[in-house]
Length: 239
Image (cartoon, rainbow, N blue to C red; front, top):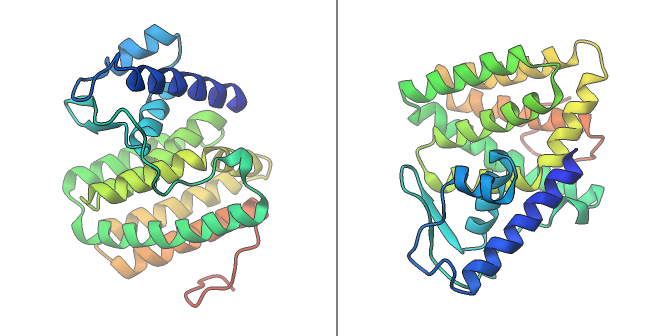
């Protein structure tokens, strides 16, 4: 199922990028709404979200809440990009998880300091929905991703959210694989959920150091569930 989703995302991204390069959507114009694009290409809203995130990461569009996606350039940026998952070996994936640990633990620590009541309500709601779908593979993957992006949003630094959203998009299959592995082991989904709850509780209590440690622990456990060998860290909370 995921292979088909990736294929659809690449197809629609390629078509929209070509349309932008050819001036069908001029610089400064808005792309059709997500609903309109989904209908035009016959794909889901989730695929369109992935497409627009790819276009944004390439510097072709910018997105603002309530405004939509605006074309900012006809040519993509040649800046930093992560490799796509099909091109990743196990060592490269481990290194990306190593990077993810630092970025997401820092985001969780900032979220603990900066979170608003609305942020806490949103994260709590995501956790409740995730708990209700612990054994439903695809909803659990989507809600897991949304929870991590919600933490980044609670930093109130849009670059944390954009960077981690991009990284999450690149590692979607790894997260799906980790979830699939989790479902095969009795009561492991509950253990994973407790890791999420520990992060949330630290953020709710405003405990930055605890939020950082809980996030590091969770992501190291996630890497272990994928069978990845992470490099040693000075802040390693695992024995």
